[in-house]
Image (cartoon, rainbow, N blue to C red):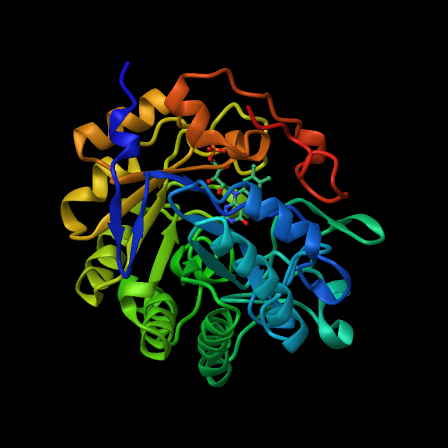
Length: 364
Ligand SMILES: Cc1cc2nc3c(=O)[nH]c(=O)nc-3n(C[C@H](O)[C@H](O)[C@H](O)COP(=O)(O)O)c2cc1C
């Protein structure tokens, strides 16, 4: 099969990607003290600068947004400085890099929270299951429902995150509206039981995401802002009873904003052994929503070079973001171009640790 479409350049808002093989946002839990990116993180991203666009890992916009050990932030001057080392390294290697803006909401634990208070969410609905804290595996706590008067502050956290990302030299930002984190906790009816203007109807449940997108676009420029959604996602015990209706509304509201791109996670990563494996019976997300999205559309989830090329050829996606294969193949575009063999990835080193399984995968 051909992979020729993967090497066509693509306009993504304000930037021009040199190919359509993007690096998906990947949490690796390897930030330094103070959740500050260090030289090892700069090396990791520089190694992957041949991606058409790098979407850097989910990064908490406020301290309360953290839910795992050693994930980077973008709220302190030291973090901005640390990220500056990363963006400089990527740009020196000819790459482009956006930052994924993150607030985990209830996917946190009081041990991560300033003042050791409960994490927050749309409603006081607990995740079934256990999380990993510094003290080991622990049951999730029942989060505190955010009060209406606090929501402007949540939106402002994302706005400041975007401002800080700009100061750190990023080419743009991606708002993380997927995988069961705070914005999706508001979107989905399983997790949003509010009776005020931020819950109930689809219009109300979409309000926090839409207001966040407006604020982030206003503070920078819509053509530097993307958004990631997972319509059929089941990650972090967060689902909706009617994902097509919900996401048709959300995407319809986002469409006139002039965003750089829409990034959709495909529901076909089942059988991967990941806790956020997606529903096997669901239709293609990009196939379902392509017709209502006027701009660049990125698809992710379970792609190979051939299936990515086919999706672009069919017009369901304009580019494909690769996660696991890009972890173990820093020169993934060169390998796809040559039809070279791929190095297998080691799940044991996905999250946390140091260079092993991070910066030591070979190039061709
Ligand atoms: C180790 C790991 C970390 C991930 N971290 C994030 C993240 O920070 N933000 C996000 O939106 N998705 C995250 N994902 C999901 C990936 O971006 C991607 O959607 C998923 O791996 C499916 O693509 P793939 O089949 O090419 O790996 C992560 C996945 C993996 C395997």
